[in-house]
Image 1: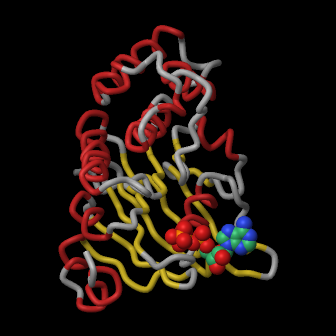
Image 2: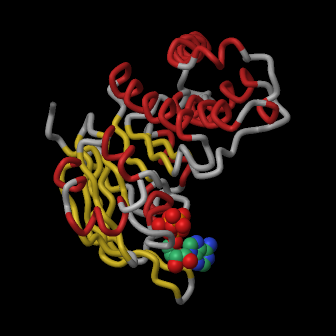
Length: 244
Ligand code: ATP
């Protein structure tokens, strides 16, 4: 696997008014890696993904993507660079069909992506998520929680991600369905070489699919390592693996 850095976050800080949510965060993800972000509720994981994808402006620090400075860039411009954020709570369009949700996923690239490519991408997505093909004419909001999550990820895939930021893709799903969703994340990398930065509440499950992880606490990185090291780390076990 290539060790070139796809994303390099350097001394990043971000605030909500007086609340400093990120404090001098530095991390990187190499091309082709799956990296997990671990940490308690309120640690700053979502804020970090939002700052990377341009939804929130950092107060300090730098974000380099493919070697280019994207710090403070508008979210629409970031997604055009194939850096795609699938946010928490699967924000799909519930009154639109599965197929139309997928077409909307390609919206940001409509000027550059030919219709033929969009159709090809839909085919690829259907191969990866056969359930979505079976249900292509069903309204998004009438799908099960797991199917909606798959649709949210599939819609992200329509933007041809080089780097996919996934925020809690298994939130609220039954354990077996959650396992399927995480398996799909791994398949995405195998099929398309997609690099993934993942927030996942199930630390054991996320470290099983991830190569490496970072632990965030109070807006700062307090630990990092490969998945095996983190799974065997006494502090990680104590803090996050006690009940899993
Ligand atoms: P969770 O797992 O609960 O989603 P998280 O690690 O993703 O947690 P963030 O959502 O990034 O944490 O929150 C980091 C800090 O920023 C918390 O103290 C939170 O209360 C605060 N925060 C997050 N969003 C806002 C907001 N819109 N306005 C004010 N403070 C916020």
